[in-house]
Amino acid sequence: VASSLVHLQLLASLNLRDNKMGFEGYTTITQCLGHHPHLTDFWLEKFCLEGHSQAVTCVAWSPDSTKLASASADRTVKIWNAVTGELISTLEGHSDVVRSVVWSPDGTKLASASYDKTVKIWNALTGELILTLKGHSGSVY
Image (tube, rainbow, N blue to C red; front, side):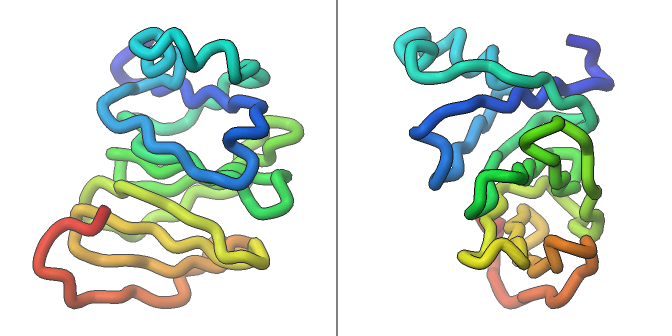
């Protein structure tokens, strides 16, 4: 994998449909699974999504499983079409690594947490920043 390109591999799994899974320290899900071969029996690779310039730190399915959000050390969150693999939008605004991302129950909003000590609330449909929550004394995971 070229250093300027990170492959985010979309996995089809009942285990991932309603959960997020962090891949801290790995630049690809295949690399993560290579270190945990017992997990490969549960997952089927469907796509290789390319777009982040640094390591992917978290992946989260939308409540209806039609979209995927990915957080990255490149300080962005990307929203992907989970059916076609197309990049829908890139959310920019964090000043440090984005550590985690989670969907609202209705799928209209995303919350992202960062080492920049903030949580940002995004409109998942338009990609617009709604609110920045400040006040943490350290990195937010």
